[in-house]
Image (cartoon, rainbow, N blue to C red; front, side):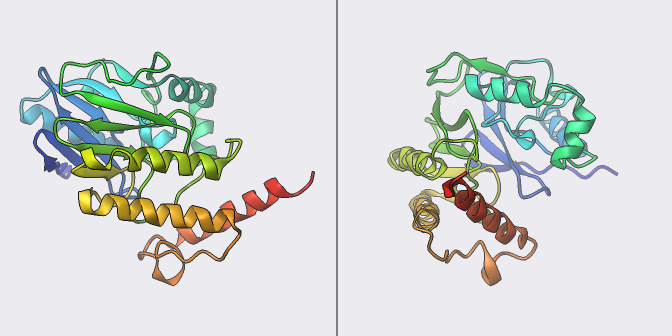
Length: 273
C-alpha cells in the first residue's frame, strides 16, 4: 500500500513535505486558483502521493518553481498537470544544458536513485533576467537570485506569510556546498548569506532544501554558522562545525567527506598550474 504523503503546515497557506531522501523539502503555497509547488520531490511514489493528497483536498497545481538546477530540485509528475514551471533564466539554461543527451546515462553518472522519475525532469521556463516577483495568481512571491551553491540559484520569500524558501542553503545537516564553477565560490556564497540576512526582519519561517525547517529565531544563527564555516575555509583553518566529524547527525557522516573534497578543490584552485 502506498504510504500517504504528509504535508506539514508551517504558516497560513503554506505547507512542506519532507522526503526520506536527504530530508529534502518540497513547498506548497496556496494561491487564488490553486497551489505553487516549490522543488517537489523526490521518488515517484512521493510525487504521486503528493499529487493524490492535493487532489483529495480539492487543490490543483497552477505553477512550479525550481530554486536551482540540481536534479533533485527539477522533478515533476504528470499528475501535477502541464502548468508553468519556473526558474531563473540562468537556472533554466543550466538545467537544459546538463540534461541534454541520454537521461539514463546522466542519471547513472550523477547518482540519481532508480525510483526517481526522469520523464519530466528539468522542463522549466526561465524568467526574464532581473525578474523579482513570481508571475502567478497568489500571494506576492519575491525572487532573490544569487550565485551561491549553483548557477541561477534563487530564494523565494512568500511576503504575506513571511516564509522564506532558501533552496540549498541554511541547512542544519549539510555544510555550505560551494558552486565549484564560480570565479570566487566562497565570496559569492558570503554575498548570498548577506542577501538572506537582509531579509531577516520579514521572515517568520525558513525552509532549507535539506534539513529542518526553522523559525525566525534560528535564521540568523544558521547564517552565522554557515558564515563561520566559510571564513574558516577561506583562512585555511581547521573547521569546527557540528555538521561534520563526530558531532554529525547519524546517517550524515558523508558530509565530512564532502567537506574534505571542498577543502581539496579550493587548495587545487590556489595551486599554480
